[in-house]
Amino acid sequence: MDSRKLEMTVLMTPDMANFSGKVHGGALLNLLDRVAFSCASRFSQRYAVTISVDQVVFKEPVNVGELVTFRASINHAGRTSMEVGIRVEAEEIRTGVRRHTNSCYFTMIAMDADGRPVEVPTLRVENDLERKRHHAASVRRRLRREFEEEMRKAAEGEY
Image (cartoon, rainbow, N blue to C red; front, side, top):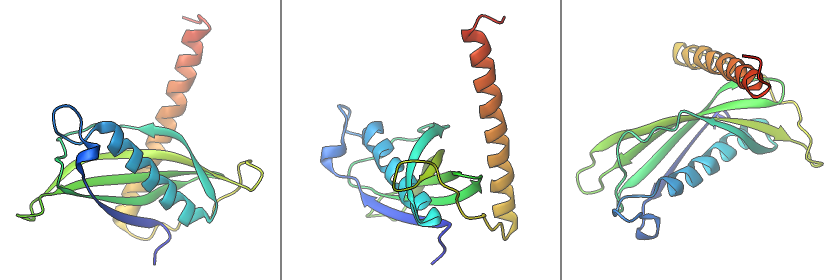
């Protein structure tokens, strides 16, 4: 089993529905966070906590009764942090038709038993797809840092 990847499939049930009868975005976010935690913890062999979530855009609604598959991978590993990319697909059970409903990126931190950040293993990047994901994760990391700096300046009135 590849510790850099995780796949989970969940049946969408009526208790997950919003007022329009579709699966509530919050229910999906809850599952996404569990998938990110599981993938990051498997890779780091540590408890992992969520630091940030990037680019959660719900492209299509998910229906009650569909199977939803979450495909997660470690795209980047820093000293203590990991980016977990997750692709979400909904499947209509009777027809087998699958739809890509969204993708998102979680930044997770590995923690020791005392709740302090701890180093994670070096990420092996083995093929072109993994190189592409690793590069894109590096770009997202740089942009997050630039955004944080700009927001700090704005909050301090440096403009």
